[in-house]
Length: 166
Image (cartoon, rainbow, N blue to C red; front, side, top):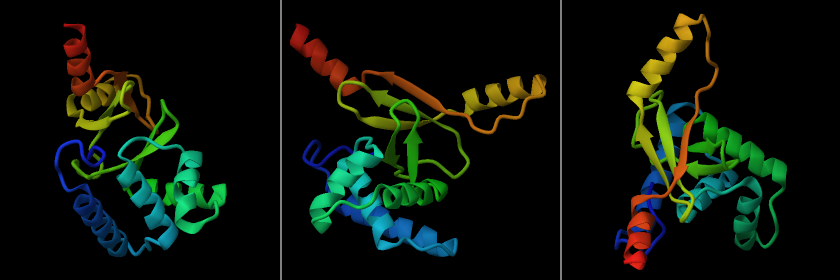
């Protein structure tokens, strides 16, 4: 996932516009509509670059319209975006992050959540997924949902902490 602007010299606004265009195309291909409200929610998540809860999104979207969107509207937009693989819900944080589509649909991923800077990274976890599917099958269990989230400290924050300590 992209980090907030100015951290690496990367043109994040161009990335955001590209990801929004890709989301629009993906929705059209599925016969769905990326309405203005849904697009605004996705844009806010892409722009923020860190997990946001529904009420954080309401506050973030308030300056755009001058009034707060209704919570039900935000929750409906989040449900739509999640169903279409455009965002992920982080169970541990009860928050949402935009999906930069660095993985294919159906691939299991783990979220590495930095408790210092709130950066979230998606990492493919094929081996863990296969092991859990095998475990479930051996016990005759059919999982409805599998969530992998690791909380800790990212490389950037760890390096900064080590530099301060020395």
